[in-house]
Length: 114
Image (cartoon, rainbow, N blue to C red; front, side, top):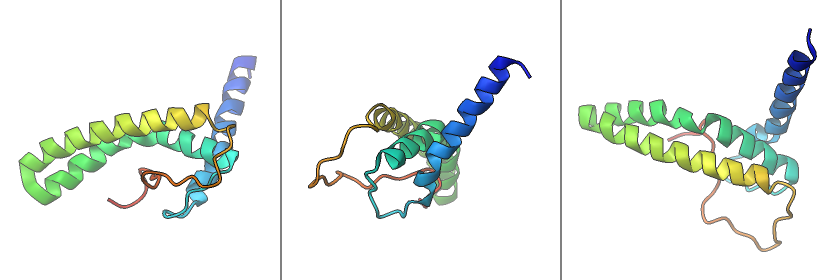
């Protein structure tokens, strides 16, 4: 293997290992450790755009063709939000979270329910 291929493989493995704490997190918990923040950021940044087909399908099931259109735009909005939030969590994973911090909304990943 070439050096670039080895470096790329190592970066992918590092991203996967960084994301593992986010998969283990319960939906109602807000984990504040730096590894979990980094993992949550990687997962949301990498998979946030999966909301587009998910919300499109949900909208179609619930309201037919108008629901498909609405679900598409909802998915795009959620994809943008998840990507931005993921980038912020990746950029600030090293920063400690204040003791009395309460998130405005609980973090979610694409893999959770509706």
